[in-house]
Amino acid sequence: MPAPLVGEEQATDNRNARAAQPRRGDARAAHLGLLAIAAALAAIFYFLGYRLGRQPDLKTHVPEFIGLNLGAGALYLVGIYLVEQFRLGRAALVTILASAVVFRLCLLPCEPQLSDDVYRYQWEGRVERAHINPYEVFPELAGVRSLEDPRHPLANRTVPTLYPPLSEVAFSWVKTVAGYKRLFTALDLGSVGLVVLLLARVKQPLQRVLIYAWNPTVLVSFALCGHHDSLAILTLLAAELLILARRRLTAMVFLALSFLAKFFPLVLLPIFLRGRRTAGDPVRAANSVWLGAGVFAAVALLGYLPYLGAGPRLFGGLSDYAVGWEANDSLFRLVLRAGNSKAQAELVTGVMALALVAYALKKQIEPLRASLLVTAGLVMLSPAAFPWYFTWSVPFLCFYPRAPWLLMSVTAVLGYSPVVAYAAGQPYRDSPFILALEYAPVYLWLAIGLVQRARAPVASVGQ
Image 1 (cartoon, rainbow, N blue to C red):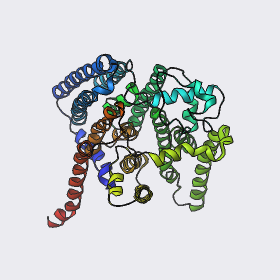
Image 2: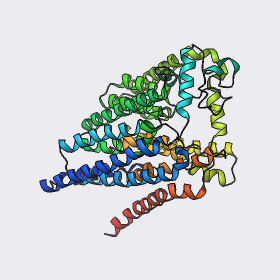
Image 3: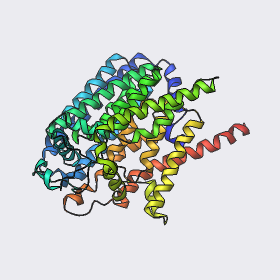
């Protein structure tokens, strides 16, 4: 499974394909195709942001929302094809970057009705500005009820925050829902810029930034819903750029900041520590690993230091979330339905996640490719795989554009389908049919790739 998730040979194959110089007319036609796709996408996102998105009951229009996003996803995939097949120039890069800004501006006016997370951010920000430890309180607590927006009652009212410290600080920077959307969209655009710098660093075509900049799931997650994951993505990409520039200690600082924004970058720590090895000098290599781990731990501890008064409640919200949530999952659901308890399923999938990290270490996979492998595998193994979780690995597809995972980043929008029933007061429950539509094509494509890879050596021997 690890190899097909990443597509180890694909980036090399794509660079070899680009070595052939296509006719200038072909490149010009491809740029015109990109312009046409950008215009169509802008029309879709304008309709979502200014028409459908402004409906007071958007939650009842989720089927139309999903259909439009799947259409946008199909156009997006055609755009990737053009970027991969033609040597596009600077004009195409300007088109890609300018369109990325326009798409986000189209979605910003929309109320974030598909997820109420941003309203929790607002409450957390008010708690922070009141100088209250957010790990010690929860919305139902009498002393802080007045901090809640009565127009948007919060869910999980007896659960303290599950967000790490850097996110808590970020929540205090702005006061309005529109402000959160603008903040996390600006950070998302910052990630677009870092992807361009990373592409230049590894000498890949800069136009591949389209894979992140035009991704519909990324656009909906940040510009429409205002999720804060863009903070973790931005700091993680900064760490990737620094590790490639051999500024290793600074890279560990930014990896720790990413962890302090969202917990998932912790699984990448062994990958970054492995990158600190010094060939031919095991003592120096060991010291380098310990130094890197120490820097990470020190920054993480400094982040948590102002909140240590919460004591054992520091991770109470996270543990409550882990116990209570299962949503839009795939491999975890299969393990659970095989007759395991939730604890057993968590153990099995946890071991599988560690196996992905071990595989990346054993094969000495470079950080960008290992980050795709681990973040993609982590979401597929997680008991909660909300659509915005899939944004974690999309930046790394710019360097290793593996077709099945590109498809997964598009079909992830189906994860919003339970919103309809939830808005009607019913439980937040996934449909097995919708889950099959979301995941089955991806796993089938991965299985075909595995079979082809397994048969390739046999074919070579036969020749």
